[in-house]
Image (cartoon, rainbow, N blue to C red; front, top):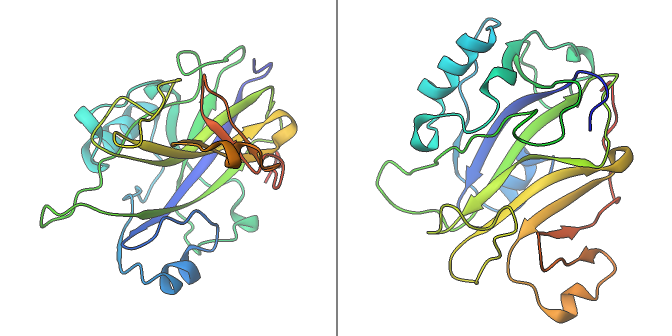
Length: 225
């Protein structure tokens, strides 16, 4: 439960897709290494936008599933980047997407936001793999509490599986997201078929009720940057 109003900032830089699934912060070099030649990005506004205007922008320009923001649209706004001097990934000085967690929030119903974007090829073909890249920053007073989820990738014919405890069958779907845990410890949180020998690895924590944690604590997030 967040004790103070907190927020995180997102600058969604690019999505590349072609031959291999890769999640990493050095998107440019890896996209070349894996011959990921097709790319797209979310169009950001050139000026700051209030929550209501931000919602209109996202719904009209970000190819949302069912044309709507699923949860927490009132927690979204485009603001000036307060961490511009420490930005490491892009040279843009434009607005960033602010996601607010009100005081006392603890779930997608009470804080943060959730929406799904559809990445469709113009020729109707499907992608066999994708890579997503974005920048994220947390407010100085951000309370990590037990954890929270960040944007990730999801695929497969089952549009409602591989989330919220709905386990994959190996034929229906997959999902991978970054998460923060207590004290900002980072991990990859995924829904995909697991094998016993994998679950015995030190870096993997399998959970039959929810998703699988990969490399928890091998990296971390920091408030104020």
